[in-house]
Amino acid sequence: MSIGEVYNKIKNEIPENVTLICVSKTRQISEIKEAYDSGARDFGENKVQEFLEKYDSIGKDIRWHFIGHLQTNKVKYIVGKVHLIHSLDSIHLLKEIEKRYGAKNEIANVLIQINIGNEIAKTGVAPEEMNDLIKACEECNNVKVKGLMATIPIGDDESSRKYFAKMKAVFDDLKTYKYKNVSMEFLSLGMSKDFPIALEQGANMIRLGTKIFGKRDYKKLEAL
Image 1 (cartoon, rainbow, N blue to C red):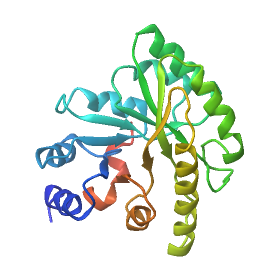
Image 2 (cartoon, rainbow, N blue to C red):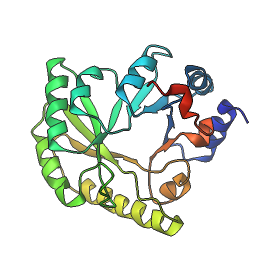
Image 3 (cartoon, rainbow, N blue to C red):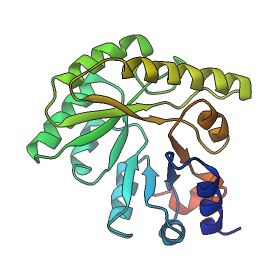
């Protein structure tokens, strides 16, 4: 099937309330346009330089999601360009986002990224440190938290189900509190190999790359 056919097949199979993000990192403009022409409007990038090179190349109504680790020295380049930042993982990054977006009188919509598996090699705030980050978010004027995101440890279906369930429990618990600048609207979980389980456990935002575009050829965009 073509990229567009795959996109629409998945779109028709998932619940209407679920946001399907086409992970377009390392993809060529022609591939992104094919998904766009088939109705896709939510696209995810994980490197600022690559995102900027694509930003002006496709439809202006695209909702760009920044899904990778965001370095503080790169925040200034994405102000006003990104629909949702999925990777708020520290108070240090929060302060930089607040500063840069405040200077341009823009609002940054973000998700708190949780390192739910406490993996050393992955970014994300540790679950036990999340409350401190939330308190810092309440002090902001230009950052609005819209939910949570996680990339879970690699494992089998049972392991995936366990971690997704943990994230849903955190999400539901936070919903019971009233915070300034913090609301639990989006639970961004699930990628190409495990998104059905993520949906089963309550995710309402999924990030699919190879499932839509096929296997990546990293050599094509080595310079990005």
